[in-house]
Length: 169
Image (cartoon, rainbow, N blue to C red; front, side, top):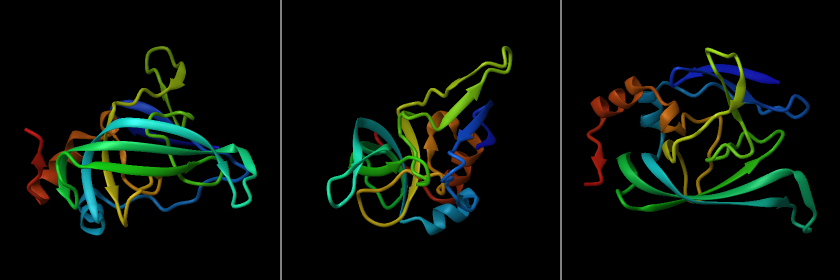
């Protein structure tokens, strides 16, 4: 199954698997997401590692992957410190709503407006992250978290107007 969105000026298709499709409500608007989140920041991906998903008995499920990612906070609006290293553990596969920080496996494809050709979207190494709870966090379709090159400028302006950001110098 495919969902469609326009992000960063490109037509983008969000991929899900129809048999065990991820189910979630659309994320709230930026100001509401900021109010509800425990942390909102821009993080630069420092490292990413993938491992096969294993259950408690050690059985491997090849259709599922666990992504371990770390990011360094470079700008923050809430709940994080500039320079802090934050950890993510995300379950990726049919059913879970988790997404890869480097689009591997592909969960976003771009359609070239001139040729109509679809390809795996190229992500910036910087993410706008809205999250709740404790580390390790999770990257999920159910939050507003996206790679920075797929975030609208108006969303960043809304955050800046709502809360004074702190940035690395």
